[in-house]
Image (cartoon, rainbow, N blue to C red):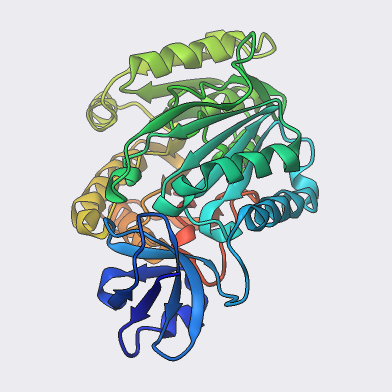
Length: 394
């Protein structure tokens, strides 16, 4: 096995159990290793970890195990996958969820591996060179741990390009189901498009926040920005909102949202309006026409995919939050999110505070928001906390 030798002093993060080894921490590679191969990580004296080698990435290696004696083989993945599945079974709030994250990458000890279950269908996303190499072992382990009927791979995210990997999509186990894939979330039926939808087909990380919105919506006029396929919108209707206006720039997403509403005849479709528009421009137009709302949801896409985009992303977050705050009635609520890993919670709060100041609104944080319990964050890997949100009252 090749050895990855660290530069002096660069072993400190490994001793804190951080799983990433950056290019600048590497002194040299002794021996030969292909992309995805397992290498021993050493400070020149002792083996500190075993990691997947990724020569094309700024993250040169991702740690599989900090146990120098542990073998990374098929049995390793069987153990790790089974442990991740069992951890979720121990949490009552995740019981009987039809949409559930089974593996959350580094936070479950499996860097670059995402697996989501939608009923008896599992969708896996492999974003690192090491995960890509162990595709078959991961699929076998998932099938054994869950008993699922089928596994679909959605390894088509931009992150793979940074690892020197091409997009991969297709069935790993089983075949496509006869009908559509539907899940029931808090009594609301939703379609899941595992082949062309965002991420693995649905935003499972917002499950708890959609339920919170539902509990806040009775009698309120709600504006849902970047609504995608209507997850927040339908929960708002289920919570008794008197009107829900939903905005997205994707016509196909809005068509799916309207179709999702039709799946739920218990919801009053007359109280829902879908607008195909640029959110930034529509927020400006709503302000110019003196529209007012009791609750606004801002759940935008990732504005800062890396640290180099933080400044531009900060301006975009401030812009939409400022305009949303101006639209709120006194006592109104803003539910605002960032899924940008480069924007930490402290910076995000600073951005929203600046937006409130410029909007001339007195506001306070009612609650801090985060991903659902099936999206854990390893204490040694704070980068795993990509989703952060604030519930703000004006």
